[in-house]
Length: 74
Image (cartoon, rainbow, N blue to C red; front, side, top):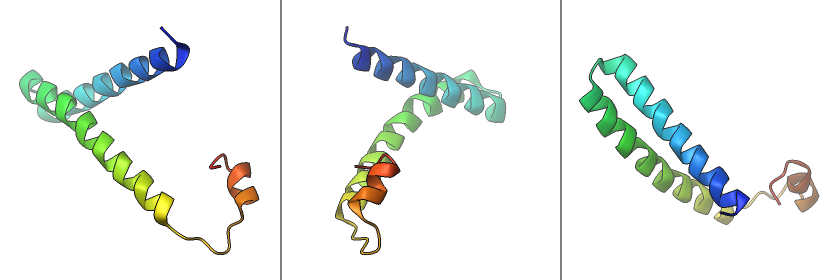
């Protein structure tokens, strides 16, 4: 398995565990925690995609490409 694929998989599992743990702490129910833990990462993925598209379309006249490269954006 390529390193980037393995990293993505482990991050996904970590995200799922954190979401389920927080949901369990807040609700006290493993059923609710499992439902939230499965749904939240899917919603977050859609939100992230929309966020990235919005940033790709945004115009920032006072920000140079070099500034973005320094910030790790280019």
